Length: 347
Image 1 (cartoon, helix red, strand yellow):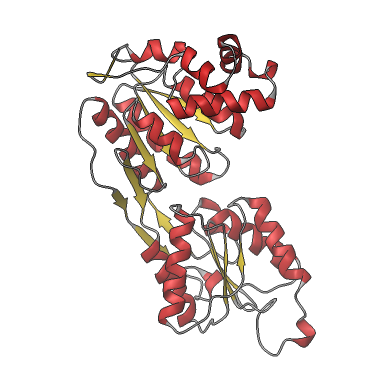
Image 2 (cartoon, one colour):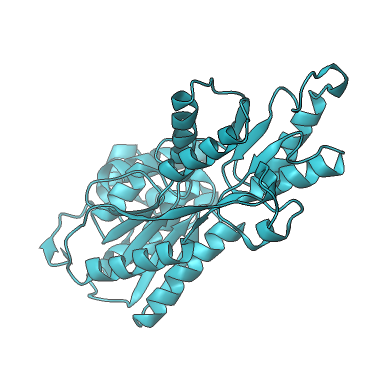
């Protein structure tokens, strides 16, 4: 078999069966109808397949085909404006190149490997966008079979990486809050290694360290609206205004949120409970979604060219399919958007 012009040794279903200690029929059922295979057996087969880098027959046959004129995209989900904008940018660029897009959303862990491997039989290359859609081992496995790019993930050898600038802008954002006199600044978002929010958290800590301030409470939550409401409820539950000797809520006078979804939910929930934003608590977001400019108070945030990030990834993936070598990581710039939620005077 040939993949991109190179000869590749392909593991067989017999090797997977032998390693997993099952019959070839069980291996076949695991990939064809996993609901009919016991969970422990299915896990053993999938683990053997991962170790051997086994590709099921349908995908393996397609690997021998020169082109399908389609690009694959793996996303953790499409909820929220960030992922939608990223995907739109990718799809528009792909369309301009005469290519279609096949989307896979990350399902349960035990089915994720199957869905991504099946995708290989339908596309010429794959873009993994953000963390959560696949682990690094799976991305590396796919990169050995198809041209691969990543967006907002950690770097993997042979995989072209694209990022929006996060750390420096997050430092600037936190420094801006410090300039407003805020000294007890919390952070909202789960800072996973190699993730956008992880880099934003690192920049936030950079600013605190430079100012001689200690990190305050961190809320490790997913970057979704419901988590923002939960954070607001936690703040309200521990808020004791009658004992406070200065402005603030629950020991904090500002929050840096990992994205606008979190920030918008927090501001809305706190405002409804009578908390004055930014007088009692300054709040910032990230992404500059449309809602951010119409919220009261307007949300201070960071603007990134997310659609352009998706477009760059699509164009680069097409170039890799045409034989281009991997390139150095590419970073798209970010800029602060100052509104009233941080304490700035509304324009």
